[in-house]
Image (cartoon, rainbow, N blue to C red; front, side):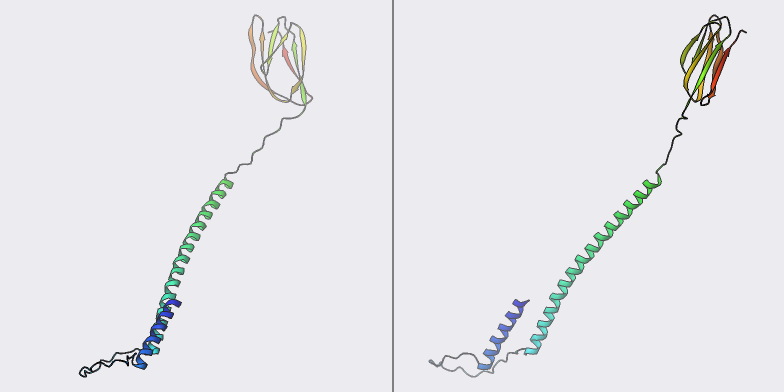
Length: 186
């Protein structure tokens, strides 16, 4: 912008210098004068109109610069809007994850133990299966199976020569309790 101003000022000064002095004339040689012709008048713009034009040029340059800034500003605003949308979607995804959170617990095993007593009053040897483990009880024998976990347990009774005499059954053993399985003649 300073260059345009400088060039304009130099042109004005040179033009006004030539107009005020009538140009430079060589006085050493006089040429034959040519017949007088009417002088052509050159219209010289006045200083005020040049200043007005210069101001218009400056305003045009400023508007170009501000338009460039406005374009950049709009681009930045668009990028900010996109980022806000992305943050919003991430927050929604996080809230959905939080909504699917499940709290769970388990019931701890009841502490303590009980005893299971096998009383075989029959004349046959028997096998008693308690929670999948086999215990042999001879005829007229009583066995004690201590330190059994409290809670539900299963048992089944088989007699030699007779097969299953008690199908698998589920019972509950309480802490410090003795549960008796009676095997008697049938």
